[in-house]
Structure formats: C-alpha cells, structure tokens
Image (cartoon, rainbow, N blue to C red; front, side, top):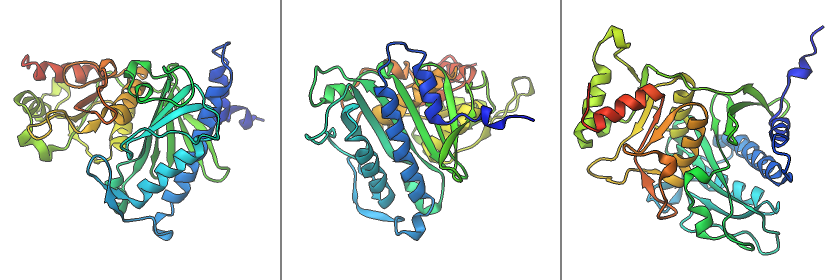
Amino acid sequence: MVDTLSKVVTIERHIIEQERLHPDATGDFSGLLHDLTLAVKLIWRETSKAGLVNLLGSAGKENIHGDQVKKLDVFADETIYKAMDHGGHLCVMASEENEKILYLPEKYPKGKYVLLYDPLDGSSNIDANVSIGTIFSIYKRISADGNGTEADCTQQGLKQIAAGYIIYGSSTMLVYTTGEGVFGFTLDPSIGEFLLSHENIKIPEKGKIYSVNEGNYKYWDEGVKKYIKYLQEEDKNESRPYSLRYIGSLVSDFHRTLLYGGIFMYPADIRNKKGKLRLMYEANPLAMILEQAGGVAIDGEKRILEIKPESLHQKTPLFLGSKFDIKTCKEFIDGREL
C-alpha cells in the first residue's frame, strides 16, 4: 500500500525544511512567512465570496498612483498589515497602496526584517472576475534597531532574501523563493492548507507566447515596435509567429510566463518615460523569482535587480521572460535587430 501522506508537503513544512539549510537560522524568518500565509488565506476567503459580502466595487478614493481603490484593495491591505504587525519579526512595512512607510504599533517588539507588498495586484479587474493576486518582497533591515526607516524599504532588489506572489484564480496558488529555487503551493480548501504542487520551477529557455498591451503600440520606441512585428512574422525555423496572451493582471501574466516561457513586456512610452510598474512592489520581487527559475528580467537596458531605488514608489519599464526571448528583445531595443 502506498503511503500517500508521506508525499504531502505543506508550505509550513517546506519553510521549516528550507530553514534547516541554514544552521544559524533562529526561526524568526519562518515565523514571518507563517504569519504571511495566514493573511493570504484570509484574503482568499474574502476574494472567493466578494460579491456576497459587498466587497466588489470602488472604495471611492484614489491611491498614491492615482488608481481607483477597490474595496478588496482596502481589505487586503489592512489584512496583511494586521497579520504582520505584532509578531516581532518585522521592523517596518511598505505597501503600494500607502504613500509613506508603515510603522508598527509601539506596543509590539521590532524585528530584523522588512516587508514590502502589493496587496491586490490586478484589482482593476476585480469586478470582471479576472484572476488577481498579492506580491511580496522581504529584506533584512539595514537600520540599527527600533522602528525601521524608508532606507530599509528602498534597498536594491539584489538584497531581497525572499519574494513571492499569490494568485487567486480557479485555484489559489502561492509561489515563493528564498534564493534556493522556486516552489509553488496550491491551496486545498478542504483542509485549509497550501500543499506543494510545483517543485523547483524552471522557466523554459525559449517560449512561444508574448504578453503585452498592444493598445499602447503607437506610443512605443521603434525598437519595441520592430520586435513585436518580428514576433508576428511567420518563420517555421524559429517557431514564429508567437501567440499573444495578455490578461492585464500582472500576477496572472507573470505566472503563465513563468510556467510556459516566452516574454512579458510593459515598455516605457512617450507618455510614461519611466514606465508604469512599481519597482519595489512588482518588478523586484518578480525579477528575483524569475532569476531563481532561470529567466531574465530587465528594464530594457539593465538588470532589474541592480537598479538603485531613488524613492519608495519608483516606477520602471519591465521586460521579463525566457533567456532566449529577452536576449532577442534586447537586440531590437539596442537597434541590432535580426
């Protein structure tokens, strides 16, 4: 008889096993991730029944980026903060939805880690019932002690010690890395546990899908335009044309790219010279995950993880995907098209 239980790996078990790879670990980091998974389960519970509990629609205000804030945005933002503010693992947090850093209540101890998060990516699609997600990034503090600072929250992506995302779709999945590979866990609602479903994820070296909002085509630089046309041309020797797939929810588009390969692009354009996606809350964590899976993430010129942040809500162009596809895209951007 096969002992199926011996094959079941919960995310809590996986976190503990990853911790054992580091003999000097104290358990604080594992506790941090445990608190975060609890927050994610609470968000999943509400997103799965949002229409029944009056959580759909706009909250009637804009965030720091000028986007309409949805009711689920507010719920997710507050849920993560409240789940993480008291454990003693963190010294400060920052959220895409808040202009300034989030200090922890004075009554709670302060730890050595920093949490940055996008509470509900793709929230503009909520009312259309399109998949949405949460993105997070973890750093070690660089300030001495006490309350964390903005400098703690604006470190290079290279300094991340963990990053991940959760996608709330037909199934809810959590994907994360601590620098030792990329692992995916699918939520089993019947037992309320994230179970290991995708071990050591690797992105294909080359894909057949490109993902970009072609509605912005006329605003792009010539190199990007030429690359798009190249992908659309037929060439059986190079497995072209590519198929276009664009959901408009970054987590969803990234997740597909990670699993199937290809390229996701959100270029700068003549209206947004600095790009639109957020470096600290979106680009950096996804770049860390992608690099751990064997992919590449650039801003069109340089590696995303090497960008030195100048502000908490800095924006960036973003190109991420398979090695072959990013290399080819970069050649077009540099004017060395094939």
